[in-house]
Image (cartoon, rainbow, N blue to C red):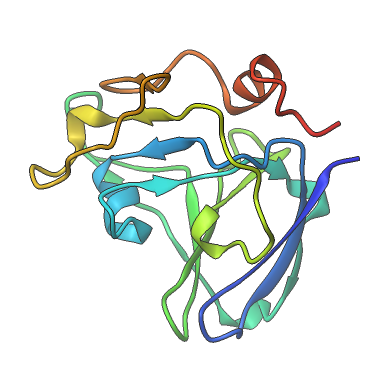
Length: 165
């Protein structure tokens, strides 16, 4: 049975719950969008969950931000298809939804109030775009990538036997 994740914004105007087979906070993204949206330590951690199970209280307080992307991988400025949901009252980043993968939603670990499993290793991605002041704490078993790994969130959970059936 999937793990039920319960989350909220700082002011509790938005509360949500969602079921996840992939609840381990292992993937640290250092891109400027994640860092500036919810990554005070220079990175953000996105989880995976089943969009069809997402239940939201306080929907009227939700805002959506779609980033403009222009970098080495996107030389022409384009609008991200990713919809970053946040509380309009307190500004807390809550989750990312991308219609490219309609069955998924990616809650930000920082918004989750439930206890989360500890990862046996971490994946540090988008290091090419990290801020110059960020010094990643890379563990002995951690994996590092300038951009994206080929392994998905689901594949990582299955490989490390952290998948919640």
